[in-house]
Image 1 (cartoon, helix red, strand yellow):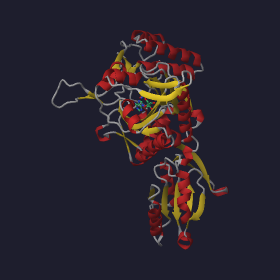
Image 2: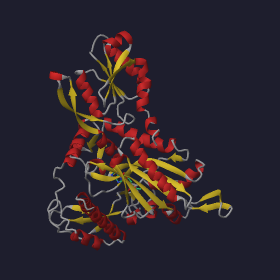
Image 3: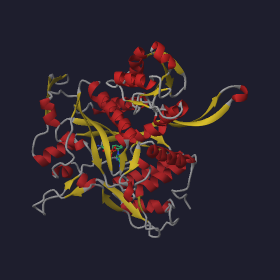
Image 4: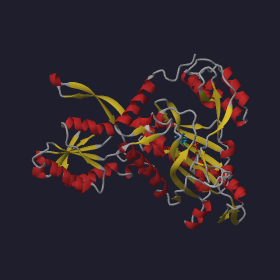
Length: 505
Ligand code: GAP
């Protein structure tokens, strides 16, 4: 019998600790928790929203500010229903589902098979795992659902809850949420909540190209909510029903998409590494089953506590989307390219551009960042007989994305120290997100800031009142540096600047 999903392992114990930490320190809460929550929907708390906004801003600037040929938009969530006919989502945005007749639990058939393949890989037989995912890809591409079921039976995959292999047929289930589009016409077609932000970019391709006078190759970037009726709601914010995507469609001349695919694949991996995700915890994974729109697709996977899983997708979408919209809307989606084709000596002329897409979930990037930052370490204090060891938990976040950049501590709540701390706060608040903490012993205050990933703690003490210097305590090393108050802006500014990330891209 395969291992039940709820069996504690070091990996899911670590995820449990991260989930508990995220709640306790105001990063992520279950949505409408007082009503026992809504499955796979989450809210971000005071520290979570700061971290998430920093990640989004970093991505946005890395796309738009660092590339002269990438501009942004913010399209609506609701779109004309035909959008989703043209994009293929009405017909093809399905998950293959299977039910276990004994436990009455529902699963994604492809996830059951992927987990089996991972089992082979973990047991040292990657070839068998690869053969299984390839066979699954072949069957799903051919929409051979009976074949998928047979593969589950052949692999003797059991329900983790009932332990039996008593499976139903495999059925396709559309993932789009819909709502009533018209208050007066009950026959009006449903309005969908967009399942990807990309279509808001495709339908605006010519608006943007003309208004911003863009020349191919160019990109359009967008950050926004997307919605999918996910059946397998597990692993915290990894798979949500309401989530946020950061997508960029890059429009290129047909025939050049291969180079651009490679370029963006490498660029996006560099982004994650520059943010502090270690190279050995990142890998590329080519898709076994291509989405209906894709000619080539690769995932950037991060090693979460529950294994290597997709964080970002890079897709070569060809002219699929623009051609589909052109056909259904009867509005030309062409670009006139007046660059000279060396082969013919004439301009390339009119064509429907090809698209290379980069698509990363803001919530998955958040989860990877949090998992990577969450560390428990043993620290030794004092020397000889007085030496003690203790455990500390900290978030080693990149300072550029930390929710709070510095905490200011008056050593005691008297002798003018609180007033001095307030002066420093007022002086730096236009530059950084700061807090003043004056409760409890200094050690406890450091601990509280370590737990939320604050890179610097500034201590105002007796000497500060005499010579306007403070100590700056560093989160990761716990070292302290004495410096003039007048040096703080430049010192903190350099460490938290996005430039430290951008320089590595
Ligand atoms: N426009 C292409 C597209 O949507 P995708 O691979 O389905 O491609 C892109 O999604 C990214 O969106 C994923 O790599 C993931 O980071 C994020 N994502 C997708 N479904 C998600 C979900 N249910 N919860 C959280 N993030 C999700």
